[in-house]
View 1: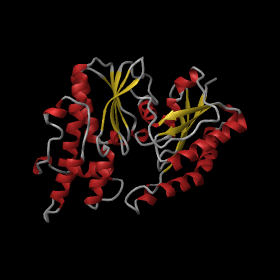
View 2 (view 1 turned 90 degrees about the horizontal axis):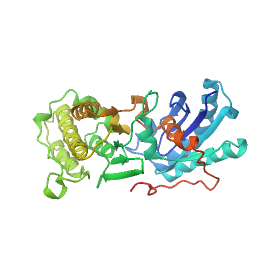
View 3 (view 1 turned 90 degrees about the vertical axis):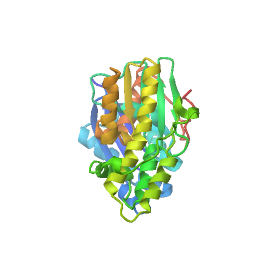
View 4 (view 1 turned 60 degrees about the vertical axis):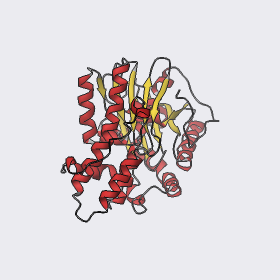
Length: 336
């Protein structure tokens, strides 16, 4: 009989609950997005996000169990995102998980949201990344290059200002393209000619040439200047913006692959759904003969399935949490 892990994700504005077995197969998943609500404000309002999590989390759980035709007693563990994220949103998920655990005796596993994204690339796959591997987490809240070894998980570099997804959202807002910005810019860019606009080549000075850090503030400023013109070719401008951003990402990954021996490249997070980024990563992995792991598109955004998947190693070694489990808005330093 399979062991089933319930995953609860509420770190930001998506309420998501999923059932995953210990072979990383997604049995069922239910997600409610708040995008239509927060798009009215051009960004996420934390209090509104938390209130909507409260409204949806238990109806989603009932719907999930009904679809999977199982009961709470069939669960082997409950995994919940504890950090990082919006603290009000996180507390809803953690409170729900602890309540279910207290009522049923099902063990708890607290999950780091970044580790969950890394685990998303293993969902519904027969193989998983072999150690050591390189992972790029690229989303609205994070742009980090991470090394995963037997000894632990280490951050090689991260953004010094906005995350990539945040840069997409801010540029889309400046261009009056709507929220969230990533999907609309990706779609527009496919119709444009990036060569029509000269964007800056990011972080090429000697100080940053051989580092793993990211910065997108200069790119936003350059895009904003072009937006002041009357005769904007919006698809081409978005193509140029996107190309410049991903050129920096690609340079960082190539530098890491040239100087270290990795068995896999794992690219995850909301921005990993972008078509240009996926094409670039395919080319890079082929160039370095490195196995590439990308999540299925439905698992790029925050979801309960990745939370459950991240709990599988802890479940297998019986590393469970007690009822002191709590939420934290910032990253706890498990990364070196």
